[in-house]
Image (tube, rainbow, N blue to C red; front, side, top):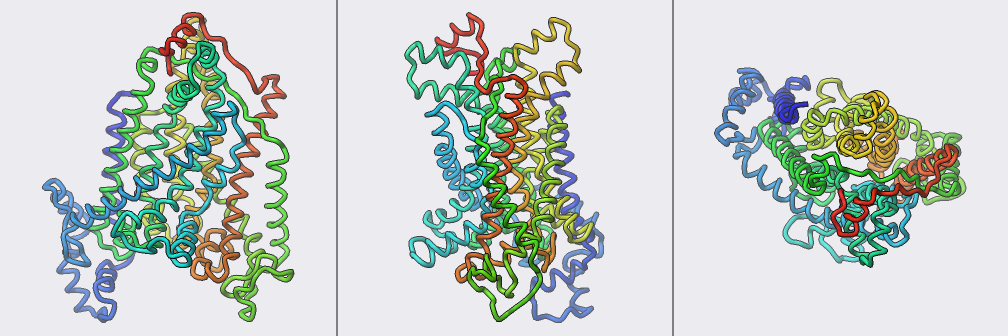
Length: 594
């Protein structure tokens, strides 16, 4: 793959996305003049004269290609056009929204890093990992539910923090916590998953024997672990900027994601194009910076094929952990399947948990337990299918890092909500369209993780030895490269399963996925937001179910991995002796990859 492949892929992806956005009003089949007229004035009658005036004012009679060409020529002059709804320049609105989102992103990243440090600290102290169920549960917490609970508790009940707006630093706290907790759970789990194997390498023992402090050993181990994970940090940062639509809506934060969503709903084409362009530019810049940081961390080892990969070390999870989580989750689902999820009884609406309704009732008096049980198949089944598809695409593209890097930067910069709107415009709203939209944007973190691991495996010293003794490329691929890459990427995919379920739910809330009265878990969360203060059980039930699903996925995978290793005769604790010169270099602090 030539070095320019990633650049070509980025350029083609950028042009394709902007072209689809520019054709959105015509792809949707709705009259853009009618949508813009209603956005300008909801009271005005949509007469033929009024619609003709809007078409003449916006130049719609010239056709979509002409409008797209005019916008592209204006872009070359630094002009993003004029809003179809407000009639103001688009550039100030996009710049203002991007500035707000970047500030929120920085604060949320701070929260995420603090939580990730707290999750990694026990691994550093004990020198061994865990199944990571708690981190997975933190990553599965819905951002908009955290935002709603934080608003009620800290903003309304206690009065500690403002509940909406964007006037000062105090307005950052609640949105940053709502966004940072799930991101911190994800990042902390990824680092904690890779760190134990590094702490068992020979150079760590030599450093400790030479009197190196724990802080110095930990810093070197983190530098050893971080290179394949740096792209994930960059993608999380971009996701916090463009994917915070729900949190920005709860707290009325005028960010770039909320701006793009509002423009898409009103078909304000110039504003939508400007917002999407800003999100794409942010994704490309962040991806380039992450690649630069990773190369600096690896140093010349990557170029000189001098990397020594950490030995695989399965994390042994106690079978009681996944068993307990599975029993609780399956018992709730099974019990709910025996009940009617659609029976409406307004006389008991918002009733608290009781023997008749073990998880209470919702705003229409429907049994929450019944809806939770019947929604499991569609929620978990669709999310699992999307997760498996993303894993397959990520692993495949991991071996094409040049092309995958550019496409991943483009896909990761697009919020699922925007992609959902584009897909629904072509295929119509529904579960299939929502699944396709989430699948289109959920593979980049897995592909980036796989590409980083593939690059490091190919640059490792033991592969050089395999080639020297005449091993065929197919043998190296199937016996060394794939086993070293597939397992950690699969665990990463499992960790993202609840997040995929939440992304599907958010599209359902916007009318782009599962439709009411379907008992889908995300819809249960969204429907309960309006009365979460009076009946928190309606929101807590699907949120706890998603958290249990995350803990079960990760702890179950850890148990299966550890048991498989023991059956194969590979003990969980194992070290690889380093060559004498590499050991001496390690003591002096110049070991390759540290």
